[in-house]
Length: 244
Ligand code: 1GP
Image (cartoon, rainbow, N blue to C red):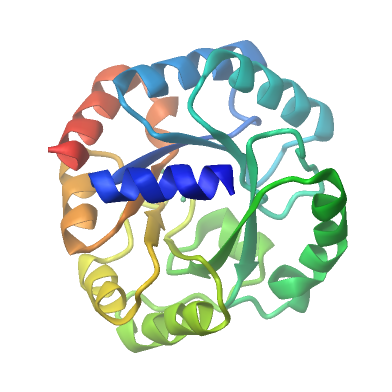
């Protein structure tokens, strides 16, 4: 419960920012430097995970270096590849609620759950909802994407997560999406649920971050922004938009 309690505390203080590091995008050493920068500019958490091209050794090495370089919690974000990291601070126990394939809803989870229990790994239970365009995550997860104007369907899935007893709802537009989840959809979902709302995908600028936050995101996840030149400043401006 350590990470959940940490998050609860952070959420009481305001918006939470997460930096997603994809092990397939850079060498482990570089990932370590990104983690250090993320922490320096004010990220509260790091997720390590990637949608394609991640193999077990890259993941293990990246996770180890990131963990070494950052003192903020580092969580494993499983995104459909077979690689898995069990020695981070917690495991995002995601169920892709709008998948056509039960493997992504509870199948793979049922194989991992006993391992997590035996190893005593903390896991955070999350209802993951993929919104258009969904990107690679949508393809891999065989998602029946929520249309960007279908607020009602997003609400339906979000309430499903809550009523199933999950701890968080995660609205995801997909890694590298051109735009974030629409503000109207975030607002509509936030109005209905009582559990914290995580939003990620397509958030690149301070304006995007502020819009997503003001619409009701409690936890904002950015990934791609750290893969571009001048990322330190970009991340800094995203953080100041979220934290002021
Ligand atoms: C995490 O997939 C997102 O929820 C990250 O997306 O790379 O577009 O920021 P970006």
